[in-house]
Amino acid sequence: MTVSRKPRSLPDEQKLRLWGVGWALALTFAAAVLAAGGTLYGLVVLLDFQKIDTTAKLDAKTLFDLVKLSFGVVAGAGALVALVVAYRRQRVDEAGAHREATRLHTERFSQAVDKLGSDSPAVRLGGVHALAGLADDAPDDSLRQTCIDVLCAYLQLPFTPDPGTDPAHQEEHHRYLAFRKVRHTILRLIGDHYRRPKGTHRSWQGCDLDLTGVTIDDDMNFDGAEFSGGTVSFHGATFSRGAVSFDGATFSGGTVDFDGATFDSDVHFEGATFSGGTVYFRVATFSNGNVHFDDATFSGSDVHFHSATFSGGNVHFDEATFSGSDVSFDDARFSGSDVSFDIATFSGGTMYFDGATFSGSDVSFDIATFSGGTMYFDGATFSGSDVSFDIATFSGGTMYFDGATFSGGTMSFSGATFSGGNVSFGGATFSGSDVSFHGAEFSDGNVSLHGAMFSGGALSFDLATFSGGALSFDLATFSGSNVFFSSAAFSGGTVSFDGATGAVPQGLLAAVGTPPPAGVTLPAAWLLSAP
Picture 1 (cartoon, rainbow, N blue to C red):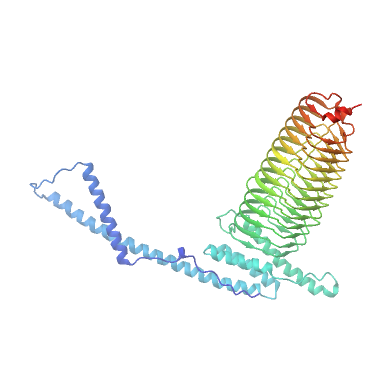
Picture 2 (cartoon, helix red, strand yellow; picture 1 turned 135 degrees about the vertical axis):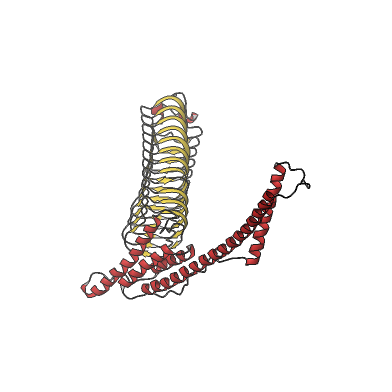
């Protein structure tokens, strides 16, 4: 491996800057005279000194005091000169020590890079450890970053793929395994250094990692790592084997970029904390692996899966907590991949699924709690997918499915509790899909299917309880749908079908009765059609 890059020059603030001795002494004496004069003047004012007695004679005691004062002035001047000289000597020594450290670092750097270019995997491995040690001992951040850049550049180099275990290629296979060990050692060292608290020895937090386009063919472990600054880029990277793990990692600043990356393995962010910074998975492809954000905490970071593709495996955010982050799946495509937010807590922040496509993929928010924040599924398409909010609790926040399309599958809020917040399906289209609020409790808040279109399928409110809040089907269109309110209890709140059109949904009049109970509003044309 040939590296022509040289260590960067020292920052300006680390270069030696000294005034001339004459200027330093003159300024020091001037400052001393001003300080002494100011002190004398202050004492005169404080002691209310009025006048010097010119008739007093100079006795032996006064003369002795003047002599002591003279010696004190001379001693003070000498001390100032010594202080200036000592300061200059100290700065010169520090600059010399820094130059010597930099020279030694440069020599060790050249030797380590030469080892990375060796044909021997063992020698390359030694070069990797040497560069990591150099980064730890670097005299300044610039030289540390240079060492890290070289390690990253090594990972970006192309390599010969595994020829397989065929005995005819045994030597090539063993060579491949040996060089793969070198690459995996670099990744392990990076993870170890990002686990160390920022500002401590051997910590690389705040440094940049450019791993753009790398191919990682085994496990990558960043568990417990902390990203509090700098940029970590896996842009366009390929993860072809093993698992990618950020379990327990902390993202409190900086940027982690997986845009355009390809994952053929599991991705883990279980228990991770996102309290600042940004994580990108835009246009990334996930196939044949699961994505885990279980028990993760989102309180101030942005996480983007815009236009990502999920074609295998599942996406889990079970028991995750969302209190102030933006998480975006805009225009993402889910084909055969289930998405789960079971037992998750939403108290703030925003989640976007605008324009997302779910084809044969189930979406689950079972037992989730919504007390704040906003969630958008506007324009999303669900084809043969089940969407479930069973036993979820809605006490605040807003959820939009406006303009969404459901063809086949089910939308279920069975056993859900609505005590606040808003859920809107304005203009949504249900074609052959069942919608269930079986056993749901409505005590406050609003659930709106204003202008929704129902073609086939069934709407079930069996065993639902209405004691407050509003459920609206105003201006909805029904074509061959069934509506069931069997054993529903109405003691408050409203259920409105104002302006609804189309044939009377089968089972509706039998379920609510004619006239309907208080709080239930049906179009006059439907009531007139009652037998």
